[in-house]
Length: 114
Length: 110
Image (cartoon, rainbow over all chains, first blue to last red; front, side, top):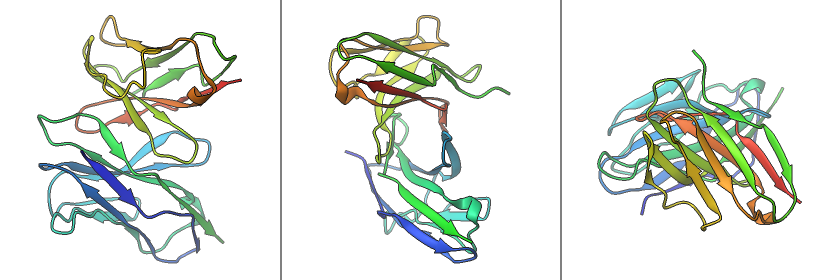
């Protein structure tokens, strides 16, 4: 079945540092890939997505590129801020005609210190 | 416009009791999903509705869990004879190509 493996945390960075959170997946067909973010005390929010190979999703300075050859969707940001402290989840949605459910990784907690 | 709403935000119950959790999806969304998130884990799929019918209930852990969506909008997740292991945050989402999540209901079974 479909699965997502993401870098385990916690990750602690200083403000303005470069961020990478690794995510790899296993899926049949052509899934869509997502990053969701959960800020402290809040619900899951969509951060960015990509629906086909070589697509790049971007939002709020975060980027991730759908790499079919390496089955990866790593999240990056060039300069993190204290306000980026949150838990980040990589997720996969199976291709059309398959399951409509999202499959999530376990989450990576990011703490950014001033 | 309004997002997905869930009530109650917190529910504390005793082992063996019955609980109902409500989800109000984004207006017009025919697809609705329930997930469960345990502490330190990612959300896990429970059930998916397309309109009024459950299109995929493969994630329901056992027959104590049941969900309905009688008019194709609001959905209720029902848990009978609650157990301590049912304690988690129950998330609802709506949408098709992109799923938008509600704030969740934190269920604590004492």
